[in-house]
Length: 76
Image 1 (cartoon, one colour):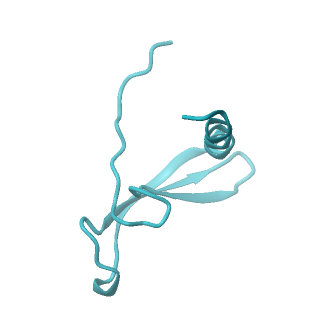
Image 2 (cartoon, one colour):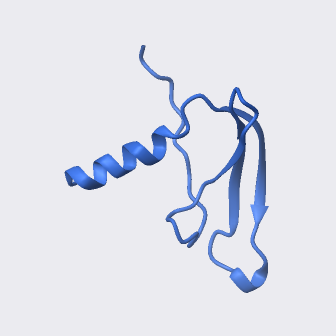
């Protein structure tokens, strides 16, 4: 990964700091947007000021299929 891409990723994902997950759902795309798989995990998050955002888990930024999050315990 080149330096510029790494900086972009850090800036993009660091926006999530301070948010708390408040909801989860599965969003299915209509048949006209069909791709495999077409069920997208969606997380709703809220920050301390009450701003609400959603995270849709996709394989890429064009939503060409749903993605998968790897959950694991963090070492402190």
